[in-house]
Image 1 (cartoon, rainbow, N blue to C red):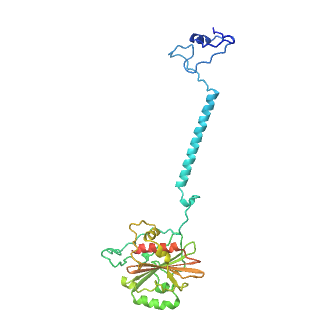
Image 2: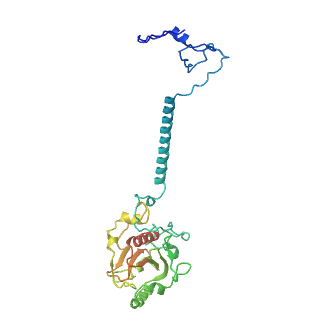
Image 3: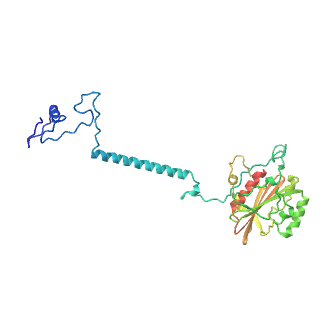
Length: 330
Protein backbone atom coordinates (compact mmCIF):
# COMPACT_ATOMS: atom_id res chain seq x y z
CA UNK A 1 0.00 0.00 0.00
CA UNK A 2 1.14 3.51 -0.61
CA UNK A 3 1.63 5.97 2.15
CA UNK A 4 -0.63 9.06 2.11
CA UNK A 5 0.62 12.54 2.98
CA UNK A 6 -1.62 14.87 5.02
CA UNK A 7 -2.45 18.23 3.56
CA UNK A 8 -0.25 20.88 5.05
CA UNK A 9 2.42 18.48 6.23
CA UNK A 10 5.89 18.78 4.83
CA UNK A 11 6.42 16.26 2.04
CA UNK A 12 8.91 13.55 2.73
CA UNK A 13 10.88 11.58 0.20
CA UNK A 14 9.42 8.06 -0.09
CA UNK A 15 11.76 5.19 0.57
CA UNK A 16 12.56 2.55 -2.02
CA UNK A 17 10.10 -0.01 -0.63
CA UNK A 18 7.24 2.50 -0.82
CA UNK A 19 8.05 3.25 -4.43
CA UNK A 20 8.12 -0.45 -5.25
CA UNK A 21 4.78 -0.99 -3.51
CA UNK A 22 3.29 1.93 -5.44
CA UNK A 23 3.82 0.14 -8.75
CA UNK A 24 0.77 -2.05 -9.37
CA UNK A 25 1.40 -5.67 -10.16
CA UNK A 26 0.30 -7.07 -13.50
CA UNK A 27 -3.42 -7.74 -13.49
CA UNK A 28 -4.01 -5.65 -10.34
CA UNK A 29 -5.93 -2.41 -10.50
CA UNK A 30 -4.19 0.64 -9.10
CA UNK A 31 -5.16 1.87 -5.71
CA UNK A 32 -7.99 4.35 -5.49
CA UNK A 33 -6.79 7.93 -5.75
CA UNK A 34 -3.37 6.93 -6.96
CA UNK A 35 -2.22 7.36 -10.53
CA UNK A 36 -0.64 4.48 -12.34
CA UNK A 37 3.08 4.74 -12.45
CA UNK A 38 4.63 5.03 -15.88
CA UNK A 39 6.36 1.86 -17.02
CA UNK A 40 10.14 2.04 -17.04
CA UNK A 41 11.65 3.33 -20.27
CA UNK A 42 14.42 0.78 -20.46
CA UNK A 43 14.63 -2.81 -19.37
CA UNK A 44 12.23 -5.75 -19.35
CA UNK A 45 8.69 -5.70 -17.91
CA UNK A 46 8.31 -5.88 -14.15
CA UNK A 47 7.11 -9.54 -14.16
CA UNK A 48 10.15 -10.71 -16.10
CA UNK A 49 13.15 -11.92 -14.25
CA UNK A 50 16.38 -10.03 -15.02
CA UNK A 51 18.33 -11.77 -17.71
CA UNK A 52 15.41 -14.05 -18.66
CA UNK A 53 16.03 -15.08 -22.28
CA UNK A 54 12.34 -15.87 -22.84
CA UNK A 55 11.15 -12.45 -21.72
CA UNK A 56 9.21 -10.44 -24.31
CA UNK A 57 11.04 -7.36 -25.64
CA UNK A 58 10.01 -4.08 -24.18
CA UNK A 59 7.64 -1.97 -26.28
CA UNK A 60 9.29 1.25 -27.58
CA UNK A 61 8.16 4.27 -25.70
CA UNK A 62 7.14 7.23 -27.90
CA UNK A 63 9.05 10.44 -27.35
CA UNK A 64 7.31 13.06 -25.34
CA UNK A 65 6.15 16.36 -26.80
CA UNK A 66 9.28 18.20 -25.71
CA UNK A 67 11.51 15.50 -27.16
CA UNK A 68 9.65 15.73 -30.48
CA UNK A 69 10.14 19.50 -30.63
CA UNK A 70 13.87 19.12 -30.03
CA UNK A 71 14.09 16.41 -32.68
CA UNK A 72 12.21 18.46 -35.28
CA UNK A 73 14.33 21.53 -34.53
CA UNK A 74 17.52 19.50 -35.01
CA UNK A 75 16.21 18.12 -38.31
CA UNK A 76 15.29 21.60 -39.55
CA UNK A 77 18.75 22.99 -38.77
CA UNK A 78 20.44 20.00 -40.39
CA UNK A 79 18.35 20.46 -43.55
CA UNK A 80 19.16 24.18 -43.61
CA UNK A 81 22.89 23.52 -43.34
CA UNK A 82 22.72 20.99 -46.19
CA UNK A 83 20.79 23.45 -48.40
CA UNK A 84 23.29 26.27 -47.77
CA UNK A 85 26.19 23.91 -48.46
CA UNK A 86 24.63 22.78 -51.74
CA UNK A 87 23.92 26.36 -52.83
CA UNK A 88 27.46 27.46 -51.93
CA UNK A 89 28.97 24.61 -53.91
CA UNK A 90 26.79 25.47 -56.90
CA UNK A 91 27.77 29.14 -56.82
CA UNK A 92 31.47 28.25 -56.57
CA UNK A 93 31.15 25.89 -59.53
CA UNK A 94 29.27 28.53 -61.51
CA UNK A 95 32.04 31.07 -60.95
CA UNK A 96 34.96 28.80 -61.76
CA UNK A 97 33.50 27.17 -64.85
CA UNK A 98 32.34 29.95 -67.24
CA UNK A 99 34.52 32.58 -68.85
CA UNK A 100 35.13 35.64 -66.73
CA UNK A 101 33.29 37.81 -69.23
CA UNK A 102 30.11 35.73 -68.63
CA UNK A 103 29.93 36.62 -64.94
CA UNK A 104 28.12 39.90 -64.12
CA UNK A 105 30.35 42.18 -62.09
CA UNK A 106 33.53 40.32 -63.09
CA UNK A 107 33.51 40.94 -66.83
CA UNK A 108 36.74 42.08 -68.48
CA UNK A 109 36.55 44.18 -71.61
CA UNK A 110 38.41 42.74 -74.59
CA UNK A 111 41.45 44.72 -75.69
CA UNK A 112 40.69 44.00 -79.34
CA UNK A 113 42.93 40.99 -79.91
CA UNK A 114 41.67 38.47 -82.46
CA UNK A 115 41.81 34.68 -82.22
CA UNK A 116 44.14 33.21 -84.82
CA UNK A 117 44.68 29.54 -85.66
CA UNK A 118 47.74 27.97 -84.00
CA UNK A 119 50.90 29.00 -85.82
CA UNK A 120 53.43 26.45 -87.01
CA UNK A 121 56.48 26.92 -89.19
CA UNK A 122 55.97 25.18 -92.56
CA UNK A 123 57.83 22.07 -93.59
CA UNK A 124 61.18 22.79 -95.21
CA UNK A 125 62.82 20.93 -98.07
CA UNK A 126 65.14 18.16 -96.93
CA UNK A 127 68.38 19.57 -95.57
CA UNK A 128 67.25 23.21 -95.73
CA UNK A 129 68.14 25.27 -92.62
CA UNK A 130 65.81 27.56 -90.72
CA UNK A 131 66.28 31.32 -91.13
CA UNK A 132 68.79 32.54 -88.60
CA UNK A 133 70.36 29.11 -88.03
CA UNK A 134 74.12 28.83 -87.66
CA UNK A 135 74.46 27.65 -91.26
CA UNK A 136 71.96 30.29 -92.48
CA UNK A 137 73.15 33.56 -90.91
CA UNK A 138 71.50 35.78 -93.53
CA UNK A 139 68.04 34.47 -92.71
CA UNK A 140 67.13 33.06 -96.13
CA UNK A 141 63.70 31.42 -96.17
CA UNK A 142 63.46 28.07 -97.95
CA UNK A 143 59.77 27.40 -97.26
CA UNK A 144 57.21 28.15 -99.96
CA UNK A 145 56.22 31.82 -99.82
CA UNK A 146 52.47 31.18 -99.52
CA UNK A 147 53.00 28.90 -96.52
CA UNK A 148 54.62 31.80 -94.63
CA UNK A 149 51.53 34.00 -94.86
CA UNK A 150 49.78 34.67 -91.56
CA UNK A 151 46.42 32.83 -91.59
CA UNK A 152 43.24 34.85 -91.22
CA UNK A 153 41.66 35.00 -87.75
CA UNK A 154 38.77 32.67 -87.05
CA UNK A 155 36.03 35.31 -87.29
CA UNK A 156 37.31 36.80 -90.56
CA UNK A 157 35.75 36.42 -94.00
CA UNK A 158 38.10 36.00 -97.02
CA UNK A 159 37.86 38.91 -99.41
CA UNK A 160 36.14 37.99 -102.62
CA UNK A 161 37.97 38.94 -105.81
CA UNK A 162 41.44 38.91 -104.27
CA UNK A 163 43.80 37.83 -107.05
CA UNK A 164 45.99 35.27 -105.25
CA UNK A 165 46.11 31.75 -106.66
CA UNK A 166 45.72 28.50 -104.72
CA UNK A 167 49.32 28.75 -103.48
CA UNK A 168 48.84 32.32 -102.31
CA UNK A 169 50.92 33.82 -105.14
CA UNK A 170 49.75 36.84 -107.13
CA UNK A 171 51.11 39.13 -109.87
CA UNK A 172 53.19 42.16 -108.95
CA UNK A 173 50.63 44.53 -110.50
CA UNK A 174 47.97 43.30 -108.04
CA UNK A 175 50.22 44.30 -105.15
CA UNK A 176 51.03 47.69 -106.69
CA UNK A 177 47.31 48.56 -106.76
CA UNK A 178 47.69 49.44 -103.08
CA UNK A 179 49.74 52.52 -104.04
CA UNK A 180 48.79 55.71 -105.84
CA UNK A 181 48.63 55.30 -109.62
CA UNK A 182 51.40 57.84 -110.25
CA UNK A 183 53.82 55.91 -108.00
CA UNK A 184 53.26 52.41 -109.39
CA UNK A 185 55.58 52.59 -112.43
CA UNK A 186 58.51 53.76 -110.31
CA UNK A 187 57.91 51.07 -107.68
CA UNK A 188 57.58 48.35 -110.31
CA UNK A 189 60.84 49.29 -112.02
CA UNK A 190 62.68 49.35 -108.71
CA UNK A 191 61.37 45.96 -107.66
CA UNK A 192 62.11 44.28 -110.97
CA UNK A 193 65.67 45.62 -111.04
CA UNK A 194 66.39 44.94 -107.38
CA UNK A 195 65.89 41.22 -107.31
CA UNK A 196 62.18 40.63 -106.56
CA UNK A 197 61.33 36.96 -107.11
CA UNK A 198 57.77 36.36 -105.88
CA UNK A 199 54.76 38.06 -104.29
CA UNK A 200 52.19 36.24 -102.13
CA UNK A 201 49.12 37.70 -100.51
CA UNK A 202 45.98 37.13 -98.44
CA UNK A 203 43.00 39.37 -97.65
CA UNK A 204 40.16 39.21 -95.13
CA UNK A 205 37.55 41.32 -93.37
CA UNK A 206 36.72 41.05 -89.66
CA UNK A 207 33.21 41.58 -88.23
CA UNK A 208 33.99 45.18 -87.19
CA UNK A 209 34.56 46.08 -90.84
CA UNK A 210 38.37 46.22 -90.76
CA UNK A 211 39.89 45.04 -94.06
CA UNK A 212 43.34 43.48 -93.96
CA UNK A 213 45.59 43.02 -97.00
CA UNK A 214 48.74 41.03 -96.26
CA UNK A 215 51.63 40.68 -98.73
CA UNK A 216 54.99 38.88 -98.66
CA UNK A 217 57.71 39.88 -101.15
CA UNK A 218 60.62 37.46 -101.63
CA UNK A 219 63.91 38.79 -103.02
CA UNK A 220 66.94 36.95 -104.39
CA UNK A 221 68.98 37.82 -101.29
CA UNK A 222 68.49 39.72 -98.04
CA UNK A 223 70.53 42.67 -99.32
CA UNK A 224 67.93 43.47 -101.99
CA UNK A 225 65.14 44.00 -99.47
CA UNK A 226 66.65 47.32 -98.41
CA UNK A 227 65.87 48.74 -101.85
CA UNK A 228 62.11 48.39 -101.30
CA UNK A 229 60.55 51.83 -100.87
CA UNK A 230 56.98 50.76 -100.16
CA UNK A 231 57.47 50.92 -96.38
CA UNK A 232 58.85 54.36 -95.69
CA UNK A 233 57.55 57.66 -94.45
CA UNK A 234 57.16 58.68 -98.11
CA UNK A 235 54.77 55.80 -98.92
CA UNK A 236 51.56 56.98 -100.57
CA UNK A 237 48.76 54.45 -100.32
CA UNK A 238 45.45 54.68 -102.13
CA UNK A 239 43.22 56.67 -99.79
CA UNK A 240 46.12 57.63 -97.52
CA UNK A 241 48.37 60.11 -99.26
CA UNK A 242 50.12 61.22 -96.08
CA UNK A 243 51.25 58.79 -93.39
CA UNK A 244 53.28 59.18 -90.22
CA UNK A 245 54.97 56.96 -87.67
CA UNK A 246 52.69 54.99 -85.36
CA UNK A 247 53.62 56.46 -82.00
CA UNK A 248 51.50 53.90 -80.16
CA UNK A 249 53.72 51.13 -81.51
CA UNK A 250 56.84 52.91 -80.30
CA UNK A 251 55.40 53.12 -76.79
CA UNK A 252 54.71 49.38 -76.55
CA UNK A 253 57.48 47.49 -74.77
CA UNK A 254 58.94 44.21 -76.00
CA UNK A 255 57.18 42.03 -73.42
CA UNK A 256 53.84 43.60 -74.32
CA UNK A 257 54.47 42.85 -77.99
CA UNK A 258 55.15 39.26 -77.04
CA UNK A 259 51.83 39.16 -75.18
CA UNK A 260 50.05 40.24 -78.37
CA UNK A 261 51.19 36.95 -79.86
CA UNK A 262 49.64 35.05 -76.95
CA UNK A 263 52.98 33.47 -76.07
CA UNK A 264 55.26 33.38 -73.06
CA UNK A 265 58.31 35.60 -73.01
CA UNK A 266 60.75 32.72 -73.43
CA UNK A 267 61.24 31.71 -77.04
CA UNK A 268 59.55 34.80 -78.47
CA UNK A 269 61.26 37.43 -80.63
CA UNK A 270 63.47 39.93 -78.84
CA UNK A 271 62.51 42.80 -81.19
CA UNK A 272 66.13 43.29 -82.18
CA UNK A 273 65.93 46.70 -83.82
CA UNK A 274 63.53 49.27 -85.19
CA UNK A 275 64.70 48.39 -88.72
CA UNK A 276 62.98 44.99 -88.57
CA UNK A 277 59.49 46.32 -87.83
CA UNK A 278 57.92 49.68 -88.72
CA UNK A 279 54.34 50.87 -88.40
CA UNK A 280 52.62 53.91 -89.88
CA UNK A 281 49.18 55.46 -89.73
CA UNK A 282 47.34 57.92 -91.90
CA UNK A 283 47.77 61.54 -90.96
CA UNK A 284 44.68 63.26 -89.57
CA UNK A 285 42.19 64.21 -90.74
CA UNK A 286 41.82 60.83 -92.39
CA UNK A 287 38.43 61.35 -94.02
CA UNK A 288 35.71 58.68 -94.14
CA UNK A 289 38.23 55.82 -93.91
CA UNK A 290 41.53 55.46 -92.11
CA UNK A 291 44.50 53.38 -93.28
CA UNK A 292 47.37 51.87 -91.30
CA UNK A 293 50.52 50.19 -92.56
CA UNK A 294 52.75 47.61 -90.89
CA UNK A 295 56.03 46.32 -92.33
CA UNK A 296 58.26 43.43 -91.26
CA UNK A 297 61.68 42.72 -92.77
CA UNK A 298 63.17 39.27 -92.22
CA UNK A 299 66.07 37.97 -94.27
CA UNK A 300 65.08 37.81 -97.91
CA UNK A 301 61.39 38.57 -97.27
CA UNK A 302 59.54 41.86 -96.82
CA UNK A 303 56.03 41.70 -95.29
CA UNK A 304 53.51 44.49 -95.92
CA UNK A 305 50.25 44.63 -93.92
CA UNK A 306 47.64 47.25 -94.80
CA UNK A 307 44.45 47.75 -92.78
CA UNK A 308 41.59 50.08 -93.65
CA UNK A 309 38.28 50.76 -91.95
CA UNK A 310 35.48 53.26 -92.11
CA UNK A 311 36.02 55.70 -89.30
CA UNK A 312 39.18 54.64 -87.46
CA UNK A 313 41.31 51.50 -87.65
CA UNK A 314 41.69 49.92 -84.17
CA UNK A 315 45.25 49.81 -82.90
CA UNK A 316 45.58 46.35 -81.37
CA UNK A 317 44.58 44.19 -84.40
CA UNK A 318 47.32 45.67 -86.59
CA UNK A 319 49.94 45.38 -83.86
CA UNK A 320 48.89 41.77 -83.28
CA UNK A 321 49.07 40.90 -86.99
CA UNK A 322 52.54 42.42 -87.24
CA UNK A 323 53.81 40.47 -84.23
CA UNK A 324 52.40 37.17 -85.46
CA UNK A 325 53.73 37.63 -88.99
CA UNK A 326 57.12 38.46 -87.50
CA UNK A 327 57.08 35.19 -85.58
CA UNK A 328 56.34 33.21 -88.72
CA UNK A 329 59.26 34.82 -90.52
CA UNK A 330 61.92 34.74 -87.81
